[in-house]
Image (cartoon, rainbow, N blue to C red; front, side):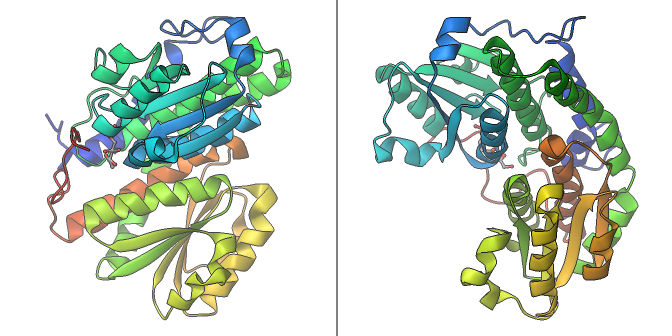
Amino acid sequence: TKAGYPHFMLKEINEQPEGIRETIKRRVDENNLIHFDDINLGKEELKAIKDIYIIACGTAYNAGLQGRFALQKIAKIKADADIASEFRYSDPFMDETTLVILVSQSGETLDTLAALREAKLKGAKTLAITNVIGSSIAREADNVIYTWAGPEIAVASTKAYTTQVVVFYMLSLYIAKLKEIITDEDYTTILNGLNEVPEKIEKIIAQEDKIKAIAEKIKDCTQGFYLGRGLDYSVATEASLKMKEVAYMHTEAFASGELKHGTIALIEDDIPVVAITTQSSLFEKSVSNIKEVKARGAYVISVTQENNKVVEEVSDEVIYIPETDDLIAGITAIVPLQLLAYHVSAMRGIDVDKPRNLAKSVTVE
Ligand code: F6R
């Protein structure tokens, strides 16, 4: 049931704190050590992993883009993300030192399953991150980590995405600890940061009226852009997909720095540009990118951390997320943008939970 919510999508956005709490709680013991029941890779095997491919479709791929960041920064392993339907055609190089991570909410996406089979054939180690116990991908992969998001009914994925990203961070911490390459201090900082995510998401959801007012302003626009640098660019990619699939608004995500290499030609008066600037080390550069679009008439909606008040000077609207470690800001920054897409969709009278032409589980190639 929708438990009093008008749509499953809104219900599931609101269920993210609970899903994330479950996803973390089940794996962390009283000494703050992470355990995964269905990972059979030992210390030596994990130490031998030289590179990682993260393979998925759609939103799960976007979660993989954040996962790639986490694995490289925390676990210090070369990681790449690729779209499942393309992966096999690039003849990817894999051997027993390769770990292929398949991300799939349903565990049934055919392209992702085919990539898993190919990876096994080539002798790579495989690991599934999925929300459905006993699904095809969970059964066939050598190792599994379940997200504990609970059943996701709306076609547009929300809580599966954020729990997938949380799993990537936990996996990265787990590997880093096993390899003994992380200080206790860094380990604790990141784990504490993850533990605080549910509460921070609750604070973001409490700003729903403000986000709804922004949705009201852009609901008749035919196109828009999402900009971000670094981790924020992965958030932009997912935020843009949400707006396209549920609100049918043509949007594109761009790496902020890439804008002036062509795309800026598309910026004209009153085009909504959502600028995500949660990364403090990239902040100045991001602000200068916002100024570039603002000067060309864009209607700028910024998503940033609470302390970054200076964006108010270059933005038409600012949505603040509670202050958090930069590394995990991506998990919270998506939430207001899920809500924005949801409200634009609802205002347009679209069947939010079942957007046209889409299926929850895609079992054809
Ligand atoms: C978007 C969405 C799709 C799925 C994609 C993969 O909101 O839901 O893009 O993420 O079809 O599905 P799974 O994760 O089941 O493999």
